[in-house]
Length: 140
Image 1 (tube, rainbow, N blue to C red):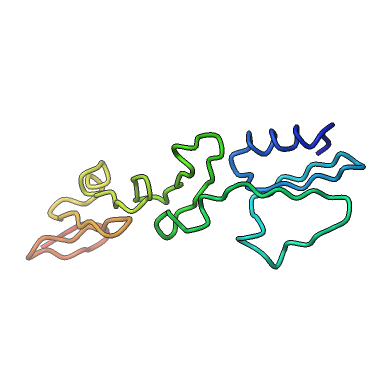
Image 2 (image 1 turned 60 degrees about the horizontal axis):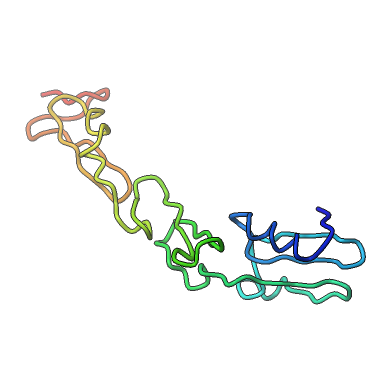
């Protein structure tokens, strides 16, 4: 995208949730916003004449979010430098707390004569003692 000044490019980066660095080409006023930086992917960083590269402080650099979640840098609020986007079945500031699906409406999906068994990020239905699963129903 084109911007008149580097300052406008910086503001655009700060106003874009996924932006952690930008490249600004002075002679063409081109502004490239990046969702990565020279620390996360040093092999992709190439210095080029006429470009100004600025990397923001990347709060996701130390992997503060639980595995399988996505970290997003929050450059607009210094008190909350990042947030985590949790995968299904997880919650909490770092996505480390599993949701007990058996305590939600999911347990109502279990057939009669079965018990909901919570698992990490999901659940399954276990037929009660003396019953077996047949055609999605627990039967004697």
